[in-house]
Each structure stands twice: as structure tokens, then as C-alpha cells.
Length: 188
Ligand code: S3P
Image 1 (cartoon, rainbow, N blue to C red):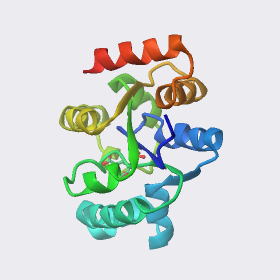
Image 2: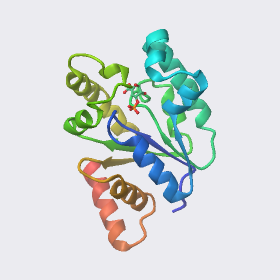
Image 3: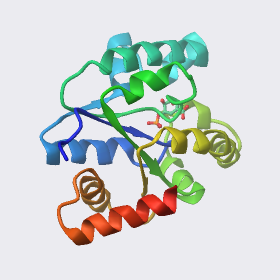
């Protein structure tokens, strides 16, 4: 099976999209793109500033425009922001010539990995755990529906997740193919 032109990573904050995406791109010889970083470069400001000045709505507009633009890029791995799937219109840009991989993490893992972070405006409040839970309830069905591959990341090193994604994209041995079929059945 030839590799897709684009691999698009979706999933909640703290699932490891950027770390895993960068390593996956390196392994495949693809460009690595991170939609949040591209938004920041274009805007000349960081995400908290954009939320502050333009509100979440302003950020979402910028996000949609960037996702559309990045859907035209060559061989690339794209890490998206956790809320990128919330606009129905974005789905076409996410799926264009892409295999969409949902990096799924438990709430504990999401919380652990975002706990000290000050760059995620949605979590700068008294109860970030409750926010993560609410977002997960809302978004998990959408990530799952959109994804071609669901990959659990809890207690796995980025290196292992990258290997597992590559095996799913291109299973080489009969054993790997059997495993992929079994995983597909489990997530059906
Ligand atoms: C958001 C996730 C963030 C960033 C923004 C909003 C979200 O990206 O896009 O703070 O709505 O979940 P990460 O998922 O990379 O943290």
C-alpha cells in the first residue's frame, strides 16, 4: 500500500500530537507541520495573545484558514490543535489526501501532560481537569468518526507510537497485517 500524501494527527491537548508528529515525519522523510505554530508565525503572536485579543472565535477563523491552506501541501505530517475538528467545514481540509490518525489519551494522561502548561488558554482556570473531561465527551466521538486509525498513546513512548502508526499505514509482515485487522475490528 503506498503511503498517503498527508498524515493528519487529531486528538485532545496532551495526546502527544506535536512530539509524535515530528518523529513520524522524520521517520517517513515527510515535512512536519503544526497548525498552531503556523498560526502563531503568521500572526506574529502566540496563542494566548490571539485568544485574549480576538477571542476563541478569532482563533478558530485563523485555524480554519490555515487548515485549508495546509491541505494543499506536499508529503507532510500535520499536527492539529485539539479543537480543529469542531467546525464541520474543517473536516474536508483535514481529510484531503490524508490518513487521519486519532491519538487517543486517557483524561489522566491529558491532565498530567498539560498540568504545567501556560500556553493553552482553555485550561487557564480553576478546574482544568473538568474542562478536559467536558471537551473529551464532546470531541471524542468526532475524532473517532473522522479517523482512519485510532492509536492509544497512554503509557507508550513517542517512539513506540510512531512505530505502531507506521505498521498500521504499511503493514509488512503477515503478523503485522493480522494485528492491524484485529485492531480495526476492535475499533469498529
Ligand atoms: C485547543 C488546543 C490547542 C490550541 C488551542 C485550542 C483546543 O492545541 O489549538 O489552545 O481547543 O483543544 P493542542 O491540542 O496542540 O494543545
